[in-house]
Amino acid sequence: MDLQDQLKKLFPDHQPSNEPEEVDEKEHELFVQKEPMICKYEKRKGKPTTIISGYEGEDEDFKLLAKEIKSKLAVGGSFKDGEIIIQGDYRDKIMKILQDKGFKTKRVGG
Image (cartoon, rainbow, N blue to C red; front, side, top):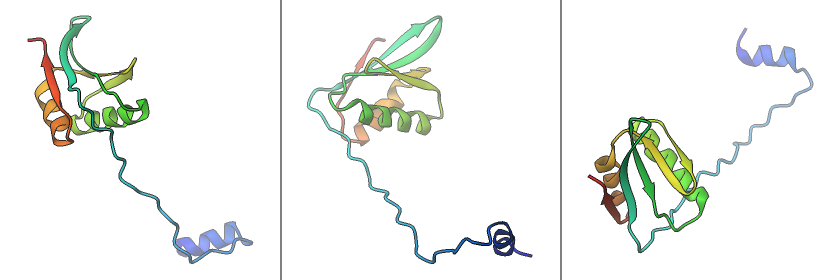
């Protein structure tokens, strides 16, 4: 007995549709600004953190950028008060990612 037969027994009134579902996967364009984004290093509670600020676009776009940076670097972090806070000192790698996306960056601190 395969999965289709099991589903038919569970849901006898259901009529399966053969139409493919529409998947809306469009690439989200980020706002590229004229002013450089600030990438600085701080120690908070004795632990190193990298803070990215200075984005002039919408907060939702900045949150998507934060999620992408965190997943590419496989690190934790958060988005608060218009800043991306990344756990650890990853300024060089973050600046490279941002420059590849077309952003200007400025390194601050140390």
